[in-house]
Each structure stands twice: as structure tokens, then as C-alpha cells.
Image 1 (spheres, one colour):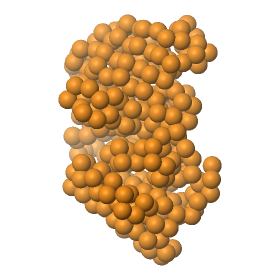
Image 2 (cartoon, one colour):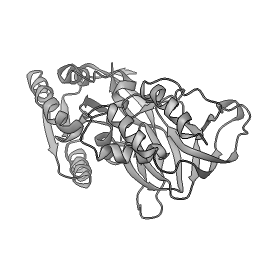
Image 3 (cartoon, rainbow, N blue to C red):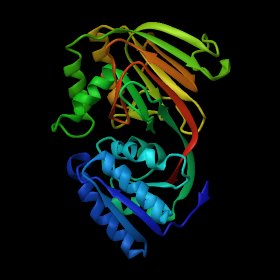
Length: 317
């Protein structure tokens, strides 16, 4: 990791992140940048498309020393098409509901001024990204930094995103309980490619393999957690050139209810029907299964997801 001292910053703010936390976090962060002499170009847009367009224009016009996201994982995901593979480091002032990437990297999640100091004093770390290939109605690939969820967890995330109460991680638990009242398992076809046998978390799998199974949900992780600390891919590493895959097989509602508290508390899922794999490229197929990436809608299966090694530079302690 390299020590840097960025002074020209493009700061992207989402006032709606974390049900208003974005606006609250932006004020002390911007004040700290000004007090320390940073030159700030601020972007506030009313849509994801506008945020990406304005950021791309800012990068082309001035090429900042760093881009700072004042928001959560969702806003980071919005900015990735403009930042991925540019080499411009991403700084974070966490202000979302989950803040999983910031937590994974050791960025303060409850002190905007300290997070702003980290932007100015931090070190550059290069991490991988996940990339959902273009297909169906999507004409461009979708990047993600933490986890792509499919099946039950995607439905839970989509429901939680539409809820205004409760706040924080409890919102995901309430959404999960609501979704458990519906159908659970669907038949999945999982194609794994691009990894040596010893790199697989499941020692019984081969280097390139196909798994067919009934599953409640399947998560693809570049990072370990989503949903504010739920440890769905407990062994994932941000810079190993691979994606981790967690398959939650056919469980009864009672069994799933027993697993939810452990998942919500950030504990490793421990059940014989939970399997893990690791691969560089993963294709998921399942009828009627939605997907989310970094908590944002990512369409419906089938999807092909690939790792993009070293695609993002981030500012860390």
C-alpha cells in the first residue's frame, strides 16, 4: 500500500443515503476538507445516471487525486462504472444503512470527520471488483464491491430497501421474516470456472464444475458481508482474484429462522446444507430468482459474474 496526500477531491454526496445520514455526514466531512486545504468539487445528483455522468465529466475535466463517496454501499455501486479500472482512489465517508465495504476496509463508520481525515492521510490499497456481464435488458456490465445476492436474500434486500422502519440492520431481519412467508427453494444451476482445485472452498469440487441443487439463496461475495454485517461469505478476500460463493440449500422455515439470528449477528452460517465454493467466473441460473448487487437491483437470473482483479483503488488506514 502506498501513502498518498490527495488535495484535489471530487466529492459525491447522496443526501438520501441512510434515510438522511448522507446529508448529516456531508457537513462535517466537507468542513474538514476545507479546514485542511483540500480543493473540493462537489457532485449532488438526483439519479444514478446523473451521478455517473457528472463524475465522468469531472474525471475527464480535472482528474482528481481521489473521489470521495459520502453515502453507503449503494452509492459506491452507482459510482463504480466511472471509477473501475481508472486508478483514481476511492475515499469513503460512510453514511448508508450497511456500510459493508467501509467496515471491511477499516474506515470509520460513525465519525465523518475522522473518515475525511483518512481520505487525506490514508494509504492506497488495490482491491478486486465483481462484474455482472451485460445481458437481457442490461446493455452495460454492472460492477459490485461486496456481494451479489440471489433468491431469498435478494428479495429480502429489495423489500428492506423499500422500508422506512426499522432502521439499520434490524430492517433486514424484519424483511427476511416477511419473505419467509412465501415460497423458499428453487432449482439452481451453478457453473464454476477459472480456479484450481485447491482454491475451492469445497474440496470435493473440481476446477471447472457444474452444481445443480435446490437452494433458498445463492450469494457471490467479493467481500465477506452484506446488509450491515451479515457474514454470508465468511472467507472472502478483497484481493485474491476470486469470488466466493455461498449456497444455502433446501431448508425448512424453522431451520431458516434458526439461521437468521446468527447471520444477522455477523456469525458464520453453520449448517450441513450450507456449501461454499470459490471461482473466478460464476454463472447462476434459476427460474424467477431476482438478484441484487451491493444492495442495488441487478435484474433476474441467469447471470454471469466474473472477478475483475485489482479493478479499484481505495483509501484505507
